[in-house]
Each structure stands twice: as structure tokens, then as C-alpha cells.
Length: 146
Image (cartoon, rainbow, N blue to C red; front, side, top):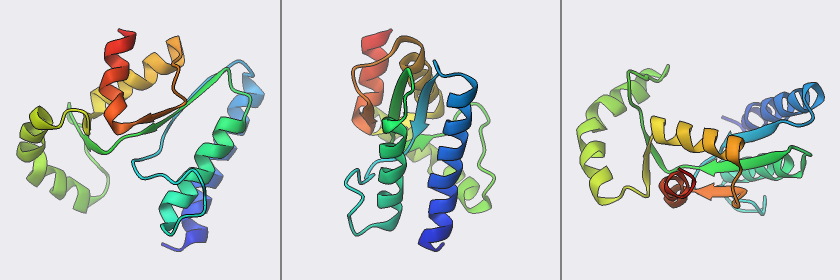
């Protein structure tokens, strides 16, 4: 995908939605899923990381009651969640047993869809000291705030 197309989807759609939400409810909180490796400087060599960094920076500059950027690493889908992309569905089917075991050894780098969702809800409901939550902090955030 070209940088322009990627930026239109990743940055453009997100900022348009955030702007609309703020206009409709100026007291709203916003949680955004970005990803490990996001480049907040917006000047790195990796295109997707720059665009995600630009998106995060724009969201953090908006006057939300609270804004939190989540940067998960590996996300293990649970409870019947399936990707719309056939290749990802196959990948998840093949790696589910590996991810289940790997989570026991690296729980701070592999989150489940359920954990990520709960952490996002906690952050927007109760707030958090961290405006950017890295992969290894998602589980910690859940423990601190529960």
C-alpha cells in the first residue's frame, strides 16, 4: 500500500472520527489502538510507524477529557473473534496453540482481545497516568486499575 493510501486510512479516518466525536461531545475520552514500534518522532524510516506516530500525536494534541494510545504487540483473538482477512484467519488458526503457550512465558508482550478491550475501557472510564501504553504495560495497567 502506498504511503498516501495508508495515511488516508490510518490518519485521515481516525482524525475525522475523533474530530466528529469531539464536536458532538467535548467531554469525551478517546482510546486508540496503534502498535508496538510506532514512531512518535514521525521521522523514522518505517512508513507505517511514522503514520501511526503522526496519528497518535494529533490525537494527543486534541482536547479530549483523556486520550490514551495503546501499542499492543501480538494480540491473540478470543471468543470467536475472526479477522476478515483470510490470510490472518489462517495465521491465527495455525498459531493459536503457540500463542497460548507463549503467553505463559511472555504475558507482557502477548495480549488477548479481551485484555486489550478491558484495558481500554478502564483507561477511558477511570483514566491513567500513561498517555501511551506499550505492549508490556497493558497487563500491568489492568492490575493497577482493578
